Length: 325
Picture 1 (tube, rainbow, N blue to C red):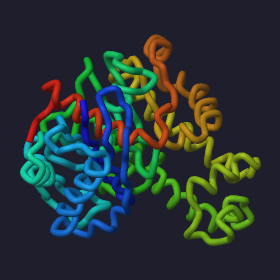
Picture 2: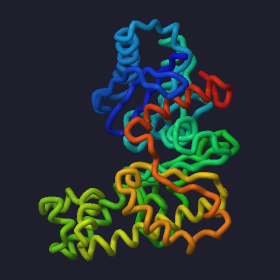
Picture 3: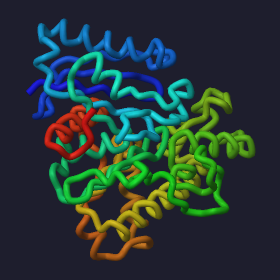
């Protein structure tokens, strides 16, 4: 069964031709900036899909469905991107309806966190468990929740906004406007901002050296490199980071009692640095029974997760589990 997956991120757009077994037969990738606003970007998406299938000698009628993963917030009922922070020109855009009308194929859309959760559920190490949580652990702390094999959508499409429960109301300001969100402590962009303030106070830290002395270049990669070199500031910061991560994961364990919690980019690239302190800290935030039952591990899907998540939206949609446009 031939499917198209479209994954629109803040920096890149990936379009792939795949199947229901998770095989990716061909893909194209462009910078998101090349889309511009919706007036130019929507026709560009149709053009990219057309090029992809023509290159593979496939007719659009052979495509059974299109999965569309986009930055939130979204309305899955109307197929609209609403107010994406990283795509400020794309406000209230009926993207799913546009693709459906231009390509005459069913389109299944959701936010990228939910798509990632479905990708893990369909193709990851915890395939088809009853209850699964996915944490992006990337530039932000997005995610998705699957309960009894279905995405937890919520009445306003804001179910599973894991990054925005409050860990400390007196904590750092989050991009969403609240204080002390999980994302404000553990999202990659937020961590960069917190680190930059710290290295101003401790300019001899190896963190700043990893950024070649440029405070504005200090980010999660600089932190991790300095942790590996046992820099004191980096070690203290990392201890605080993993403690907050454990606090957030503990809330998920206690609230949802899931079969699996899958961790995204940062954990996948730094497994030992993340998992050892996380596993040590978790008993302080979760009871033994849900902690023992749940497998907590990094994703094994790597750079294909975005594409596989989009394909999973199409698979799930064709099975009648989400809205069709």
